[in-house]
Amino acid sequence: MMNQSALLRPDWTPATVALMVLGFVVFWPLGLAMLAYILFGEKFQSFKGEANRKADTAFAWCRTNTYSASASTGNVAFDDWRKAELERLDEERRRLDEMRAEFDTYARELRRAKDQEEFDRFMRDRQQVKPAGEGGPAQGFTGN
Image 1 (cartoon, one colour):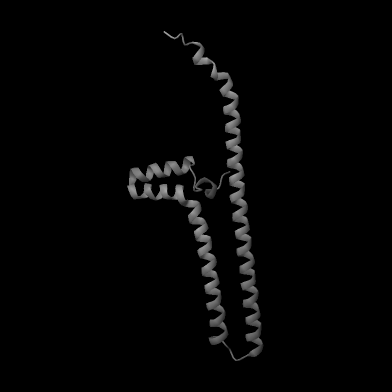
Image 2 (cartoon, rainbow, N blue to C red):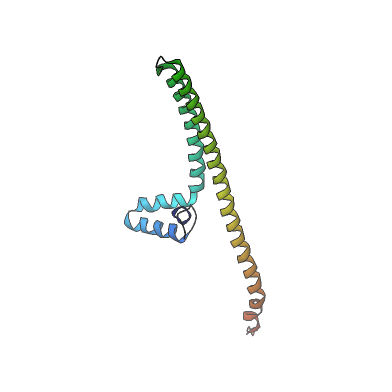
């Protein structure tokens, strides 16, 4: 069963082409937006990932400064425990972000390999058909 992300990936798939045509029929800016997604979707995804990483870094800095300065409870043991837990969670978040980036790279390479395999199969099939069809039309030509 195909999932939604594979069905609507930024590529010329039947689903994306159908949505683009439907978008142009219903309201032309929707069709234009779908065309932009098909053409530039991969670039938008990498841009989004980089923006998310930068925002996470900025908010992590804000979060650690906010908690350490203004959220003191007066109980040193609790404050130390809370600080250690927040650091552990930040480390876990960084680890998950790295895993997400690795998976995105893996999925992109799988898609690329599948596309390469389909292209190679097309070229093999085309080469097998071409020798049989090369002599067909030229043999019937009489030169009148």
